[in-house]
Image (cartoon, rainbow, N blue to C red; front, side):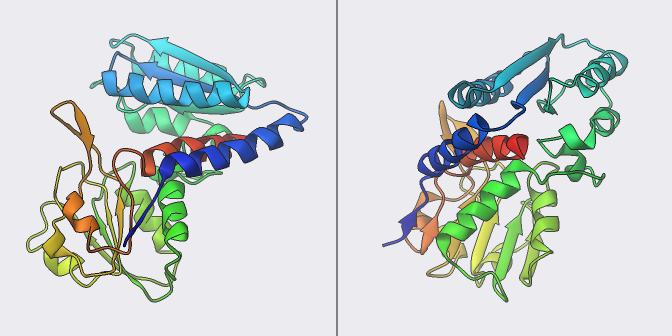
Length: 265
């Protein structure tokens, strides 16, 4: 029987440990989130972060800006929060409205406050690693697979997940294969991989016939189909795996916990 990764349980463990650490910190962490526009998915993610902050007893500040806010206005808010000693972590909730210069805004965030590690994603100096890569690496750790000399397939080269994850995995001694949904004959990348990580956002992209028996399956893709959240990996593939992360309830919850681990750090 494959092992199902329980992201909610891991999240609670991490947040419980952080709550103990926060209680004895001389300076209490505080997170500011800049939210531009009214994206519904962003609202959902912000609510998750807010609930975790309340549990931890952390000050959580939402800086809400209108959809038509200019790059200059957003940069002014970033500068204000960078210089505010009571704010220890700062992030911009992505995606942002068209017309804003994302690279310019990210580069304006102080490295020591960039707990969402957007600077790392932009290949700028950064004190942290992205929470989602931390969540994926935690899932791999839970699978107990030894990454050394393992064949690892990463599907997806996105700004927030695939590209930074590839950089993190390059620090390990792995046989790394990289692809995306446009890669022809995708199964040639995944069929003999010990670990398959998908971060595309295309439902059912990875079929059971595309993986080998006993593979570790990490699903970091998310889509909405018929009002339900689904991942990139067809659930029937889980039956062939040794370990898998479900959607929802897998990588997502742990990503929130990793954000706060960065904040406490």
